[in-house]
Image (cartoon, rainbow, N blue to C red; front, side):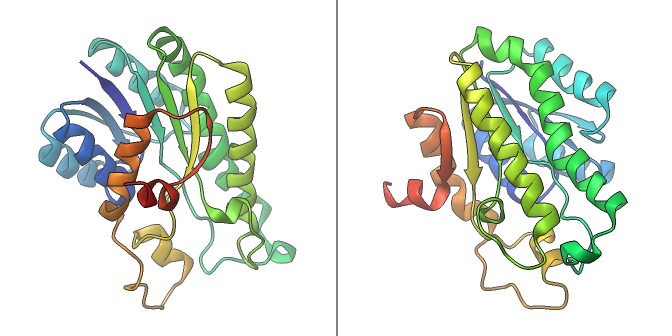
Length: 227
């Protein structure tokens, strides 16, 4: 029985990935900060253990890994939970440092803390870690300094982790621009209906798991070209 932990799975990309894995008979442990939305997601998935909470909370991270252990132990961890920060996004010259600190807590410290808890099981099962990232980690877009620099930090942490953990696959995955609530927050008042829905990248994600390439940065658009 394959077990996956997916954070931020109450909606958007996290829910799309969880739905696809559930259809492939994975047992899931999912979380989200919105308890009601998470309960709705769990009702759709049926085989998922839903634990509402925040990845910045050490007790919550321990609960996620503990729940996976009761199912047999995680062989996949998807760090999808994240926040954009202030919207509209401020330039770095005006970025409130308290808000920046929260962006780093959620997008960097939380995922790394969960990885630390999950690593023993992942090493044992020669499993995989997926850290969801963004092209804003590699490109300089005005207004994206807070979110982008946090994603750049988790990408570098992923690179080092891949070098330190040869028995675990570590992929930092750029899903591309998607029609999600977070993406709408990045462009308040704008029409983002031209962006694809999250479920459109699911086949590329499943191909990533099936082909199991070496650790590294992955653009799901590139995986889709190969299908």
